[in-house]
View: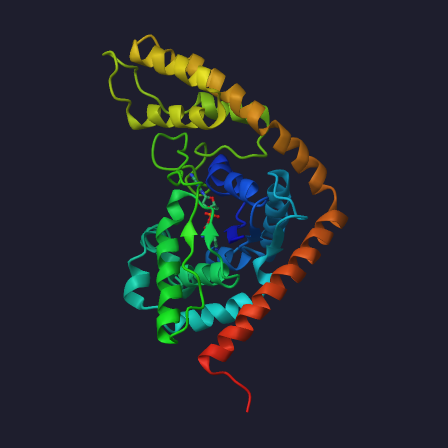
Length: 331
Ligand code: TYM
């Protein structure tokens, strides 16, 4: 049995990218491995949320993980800040994490460009904290989306560096995992890049969105004037709609619209209508569960208490061993 760890930053509602990138894989893996899923609330401090927002976002993330099928009786679900051993490992890893390698991380460079007024040290060392999250449980596999690939590469570097430095095969080198397939990148609706919470209004579809909102967003998605030659390559915005369809619709539907595109008979309005209805059908069970769970604080507290205990036990064991390896031993 392998150990699996994954997490999500609590910065608002979860979108379809989060679901297909991380949650869906975790949901499958939880039945076969020893699994930890956590809410990365320390990570979310890089954007300076108010205490009220932070608290609300953590609750929302928890509700949505559970609604997305993460089972607290099988997997360990916890809040990162409930397991402070993570921060000790983060500090220790930072001693061997170099400015050069941290400054080269694409997500750091992007964030620094987007928020030049707030390039804090937490942003720079984000990958060290993420590595600590993962190796604190000595994880082997990390179900994540494509955007996390570089972070996982650094996690392996840090794990390997520690092992070499102390001449001890202690941490496994964890890999990003999607059942042997390529990691996914779910596109947004605005014609470029990926679905993301900070990509602007209209880009993302959230698991909790009401049908009317989903219809409106999909109908407004960017397309082009339509194909003029049979079998021509699709421009990015159109390709994005097909990728979304591939995620939520059945094969027959996808083949039908591919065929229409290739014969230049496609009507994007029809494709969007069908896509919106399929997203609504796909997200329906989440919406219902989210509503039920949000009202059940007693249950949520129980889940977090059990998660805190299980995650702390595993993290405390790793930290005890790490301290010994480093030389923090008793006189
Ligand atoms: P975050 O909160 O940005 O995203 C959570 C998960 O959702 C995936 N994801 C996507 N996958 C496919 N297509 C998309 N458009 C898309 N958008 C988001 C992300 O790849 C991720 O798996 N650094 C992490 C949180 C984290 C973490 C960890 C993850 C902290 N420590 C340890 C794994 C292990 C993050 O910011 O994800």
